[in-house]
Image (cartoon, rainbow, N blue to C red):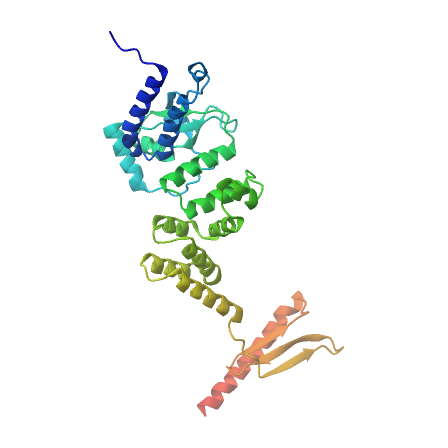
Length: 336
């Protein structure tokens, strides 16, 4: 006679299956998903059998790929084409191991908004798949959209400060969080850190993209000082220093010195050349018309004001006549 499993036995069997397949799910990078599923199975042991029916069950649904839209508050902005291709190849050989997590929002009628699974939907689209497995959760707001994906990416070590910079700025711009203090509480970061990270958004997108691609070499300290150099000396100088960082030739301290040097040069600015003499012009009634400044390097600057539009052309013609005559005299002197 077949052995009848009691509730605890069923739970233990379920836990064994979950743990056996954990390694497979890691291939799709869903570390948080594994933790959530194991936690949900363990929690069943702590409730009576009659109470287990009240627990929420999230079934996997096949949804059209064309009906899926990206998370408007996706914490990641930079994706590697190589990793998308690798995941697409995994779909071909192993199928989709972990469903994407989606919700439905009034702002996107008839669509499923991704909470977690942007890489998977991109892989599916690259393959031309028509449908994808999804776990549909309702009742999520914009903060949920961001925080669920943010913590999932942090667990997978996929998140970078460059992703954070763009995501945090959008969250504040859209009023999802009132200020940097409230956002700091949500992501467990100091508001000063958040301010420093958000300041990176003043860099051109191509520089942020390159930094994200070399995130193992470029940390926040490097990026912030390159941002200061960009502000003070422009893109070409910032690109030079970023290249030095990627090549391992510039430390944070070296960048700080470079940024300080650029700040000093900006404060000093180009040296002004003072005129050696000047001639002032006045109308017969004594009203100032302007002046002619003569410089030691051979320059002469004429600055006049209060010349009526009708008189400007006549004045220019007379000045040209005078200068032409003077130039002819100079030729005669030099020839003799």
